[in-house]
Length: 241
Image 1 (cartoon, rainbow, N blue to C red):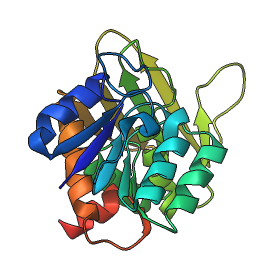
Image 2 (cartoon, rainbow, N blue to C red):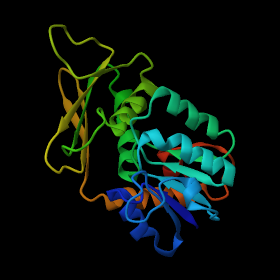
Image 3 (cartoon, rainbow, N blue to C red):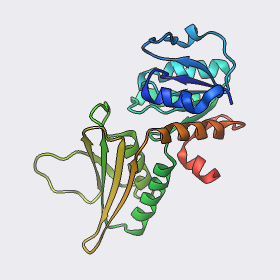
Image 4 (cartoon, rainbow, N blue to C red):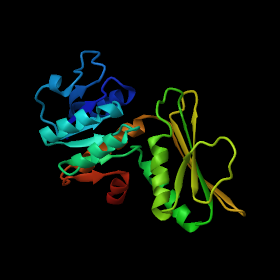
């Protein structure tokens, strides 16, 4: 596999370079520091199978344009995309293989599956999602929290995402609350609380080392090899494994 890392100067970019080793054939970073090209045009001609993006959601257009022009696959590991940016990802998937996930952890993929099963098993239960991250994280709720909500919504089409609570107002039956905490150096904790009048269950996943995201992104990149154009995510990877 020959991969280009976008966001090379960031924490995840550095982990990816280490994990990829000689499979890393190109670097791009939005800050242009440490001698790393700031744009794909500055990178020059590189033969790559995939571009892995852990930069910033605003860079998704340039990442996808490069991938389409080069005929390579794209792994999108950024979060916080606008609706227009999400549309660009879906449009690109009609031309190239695109792997897009709010979290690159296989454990989170399992958590999403379990959340979906629990929501189906307890159709009248209240469901709340809590996500905790370090104090430098920009977007809230996390992309992973949205992934968990989407998993629940698959079996509860009437579910409505409620981000944070304030003021007066009783909880509605269709509500799935999402609470975001930002503190210290927490890598990432996600919890799904399922509660009836007689019992309560909590599903939880904690990221202890960011290296797991690099491992997941590499698994995603390898998963795309030989795949036709289309939009793929961690569920597809989990099913293939």
